[in-house]
Amino acid sequence: MKISVNTEIAFTYLASRKKQTIVASLGVMFGISMFIFMQSLMKGTNDYFEKASFSSTAHIRLYSENKVADTHMLTSFLQDSSVKILTNPKQLKQTLGLNNPYGIINNIKKNKQVVAVTPQVSAQVMYSSGSVTLNGNVAGVSIDEEDKMFDVQTNMVAGNLHDLNRVNNGLLIGKGIADKLSLHVGDNITVRAVTGNPVVMRVVGIYATTIKQIDETRSYANIVQAQNLLGKDRSYVTDIKINLADYNNAPKVARDLEIITGYKAEDWVQSNEQLKAAFKIRAIILNSVIGVILLVAGFGIYNILNMTIYEKIKEIAILKATGFSGPAVISIFLQQAVYIGLIGAVVGIIFGFSITFMVSRIYIGAGTLKYLPMSFYVPHYVEAVIFGVITTIAAGYFPARKASKVDPVTIIRG
Amino acid sequence: MAEIALKAGGITKYFHDPVTFPVLKNIDLEVSRGEFVSIVGKSGCGKSTLLYILSTMDTDYEGKLEINGVNVTGKSLNELAFIRNSSIGFVFQFHYLLPDFSCLKNVMIPGLRLGRLSYKEVEQKAYEKLKMFGVEDLALKSANKLSGGQQQRVAIARSLINDPAIIMGDEPTGNLDSKNTGIVFDLFQRLTKEYHQTIIAVTHDEDFAQKSDRIIEMADGEVVK
Ligand SMILES: Nc1ncnc2c1ncn2[C@@H]1O[C@H](COP(=O)(O)OP(=O)(O)OP(=O)(O)O)[C@@H](O)[C@H]1O
Ligand SMILES: [Mg+2]
Image 1 (cartoon, rainbow over the protein chains, first blue to last red):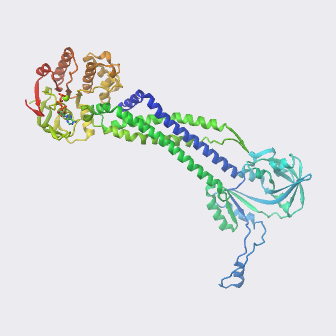
Image 2: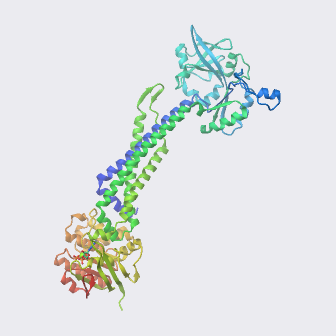
Image 3: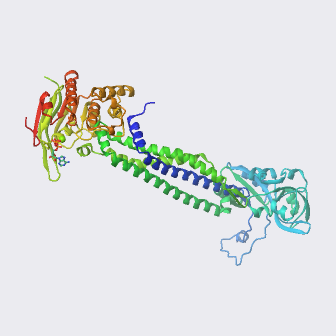
């Protein structure tokens, strides 16, 4: 390979000032490895919380909301344009079920963004076993679809979730319920809905999510079972849960669905507002820390190149006298910055990966969070190198330009 | 008539420190191709200043300068850098070499910059130039570990690497003993006679000047003879 003179001179200067070169590279290395580490930690935590929230929340939930009485009945009765005022309006008594749920589902499926739709019957219940009773709720679902949407399978700690389809009166209970009522797979449990009769069901499986409150209250039953518990017919559905291809579109799709169906469509952003806020705050903290680190690394390079140029000013003059043009001199010094940046980047990637890996092995053991959630995400590494190299080039450019402006005569005359 | 290597017309230069005064006053100069010219004069009469202008390094002057029949006054710095690299060899009065590099590299660098020959060829040629001045043994020695005279000979070797049309020296033999001065003088003479290269050398060495083709004597910023 043919190495240009500029490159050769740049290398010689770096090699003749090993200490400074190493210090400058260390600055860049530190910046890049911190960048990778912080990004990995942030993405890891965000992913963790997002996954945790999606393990129990659909992207959109459609349900019938209690309404306050308004004047539209009066208007349609009187058929005039007078202004009606309702004093002391009351909550309307309404069934919690959706009208024509399967029609709505077919309608929702027409939306291109929707990847999964499943009906659910929610029932407030009391569990009892022996003399102990417990409040909770039963989600009547199609377990296969539920599994597709929320990956119930990974949460299973005992039993088989598909037994819900096979076992008559089967019930999949949270680990909290199992512990409190000391139940095991195969045991019987009495479930009683507020509006129905007690039904004896059989525990076919036990699951544990990351959210304790859910594990202590919720159980899954077949949708038909839930309808039976409530004494309702087969068309009774309380919620429709919808997942989208891209959950970031949820708010917009939810508004559309509200208009089409006339029911309340709650998107995950609304139900997880504090999560979103936490993401934003973390991103701001992270970006300011990274910015400061890169700035410091950049100043390191700037300083060292500036010093080199003061020290080498006579040699720059000689180079220019023997025919090195301004751009050639810029190239010599900019290349030094770039090599410092590249050395720092390579070592920084290795170091950044190492600390990320080591930290991902730190045992936390807080609740269901066993280890610090770290993500190993290749774009972070690419971004780190790009930012690192941009910083070094920016930091190297000004000293390099200064070097290119050296007037050989002034220097050589002495 | 011989070809003109360098032609200067009405070169005038001022320094402004501490007060504005003319260092060079309306200097006219013509040097033919293959000519060996010495410039002599008292210390401080402006010899170095003139040489910096003739070598295109200093662009802050009034007058006209032609090199190899091409007007160089007013050309861009990058164009001038190329002209210096390809057609002018320069030996400095004080600062000589790049201390971080070996002698061989020092000689090679302007050749590599020009890029007309391969690395191997430049290396070969640089080695030959060092040999001409008897410093080939020092080829791989770091340039900052040489004596003043050794440095100067390496610097002369460097000025020849691109076979420049014009070689300018600011007291190129100032640090040399009489034997080495003789070697350098003979070599310069051979370059002018055999290769038609042009030499313009500032010197305080009476002998050296006398033996050259022509002496230009300066006094107080003017050519007097
Ligand atoms: N940067 C400068 N500012 C002001 N005056 C200067 C500057 N450089 C040189 N001079 C003056 O210009 C004059 C010519 O200087 P120059 O270096 O050309 O002399 P010289 O003939 O080469 O002398 P020497 O034989 O000692 O090398 C001197 O009087 C010197 O003091
Ligand atoms: Mg001088």
